[in-house]
Structures are given as C-alpha cells and as structure tokens.
Amino acid sequence: EFMHGHQLPWATVRDLLDDCKKLGIRNIRLYGGEPLLHRDIVRIVEHSASLGLHTWLTTNGILLKRKADDLYRAGLRRISVGFYGTDEGYNAYVQRKDQYPRLVEGVAYVRERFGMDVAMTLGWVLMRPNCSVDELHKVWAFAERYQTPIGVSLVHYSLPYFTEGPERELQFRPEDRPAIELVVDELLRLKQSRPELIQQSAMSLRSIVDWTLKGPQMEVPCDRYKLIWIGADGT
Image (cartoon, rainbow, N blue to C red; front, top):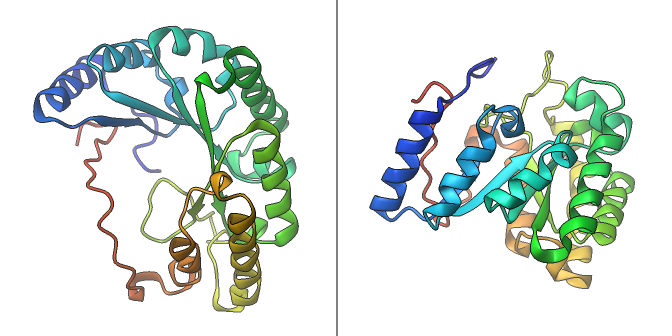
C-alpha cells in the first residue's frame, strides 16, 4: 500500500532534477514501484542525462526489452534489476504468472543489443523463501551468464518498498539463523573467488545475519550514503 497507484508528475520530476544539478547532487536513482510503468520515464531519463547527472534505473525487468532501445537513446547506461528468485519464486513475489521468462528475456536483450556499454546489476532480494545455498547458486549462475554483479538486498522491517507479505511470511524469524548463516558463508566464499561479481564488501556480507534478525536492535554503522528520497506524491 506504499503510495499505491501514484506517479510523480513530469513537471515535478523536471524541477527536482534541475534542483539536483544546481545543488551538486550528481547521482539520480529512478526507483519504484516500477519506474518503467511511468508514462514519462523516457523523457525523465533524457532530461537527467542532458544535465550530466549519473542516472540509474531500478526495475523488475518485466518491461525491459520493450523499453530498452528508447531508454538507451535517452542516455540510460546503468540498470539494476530486482531479482526476487528464479522461476516460480520470482513470479510469486511479483504476484503474476509467467513473468520470470520476461525478466530473463529483457536482461538477455540488453546484453546482446548493447553489450557492456550498459552496466547491469542484480538486486537479489534475500527473504525466507529463497534463503538457501541452492537458490544462491542459481542467482550466481545468472550473474555469471549475463555479467550482472549481485547486490544483496534484504526484506527488512524498515524498508517500505519491499513487501513482507500479508502474514509477514517473507520476513526472517529467529529459527532461520542456520539457513542465513549458510547463505552468508557461501556469499563470502563466492566473493573471494570472483570479487567483481558481488558488490558488497565482506564486512557488509557478514552483517546480513544482524540485519535480518535483530530488527530495530541492530547496530551496524554506515556513513556511505547520503540520500534524499522523493515519494510518488512529491513528499
């Protein structure tokens, strides 16, 4: 229900981007909901790129093939793809049947059409249903095939844009600790073998257990980001 059905108007986006340019804010992330559903997404990208801003779009990938050429012409060169699982795991998260093949098709199209001129990453959302070494290996195989480094995102009580499910079934529980620790150990091993394919540092990966289980009691200091979030209603 997080700002469901709202779209930030083009005029507001344009003025925000102009302000960012004046204020020295250089990195712009076009996020969601699903930004490829925004009727002005190509114009937004074009304006951001024309200002010399580093523009980054995060998508679930379903509409990527349809939109990729227009976005590239508009100047988009960085895309992160929400990766919620493979096959039925992905479909269950987006709550629509037969969508995972469209995600794969979109990523494959961008790689075949534009090569490494478009930087693509996977935002793998770690949650109870996909917290297994087997599932991690499937994500890893995808990352190797399409050269899309993995960034681990977490279903977490404090993040309104990742649903926890109607009964919080996606949220981790204390009894999940052994499964989380196995996945973290394997992430660390993979990070050591191919460091360029996992975005987080080893320290960040080790903090996943605290992030997923301690909730508001966790204390992991972070000073990497200074963010301004603009909601779909302009807040």
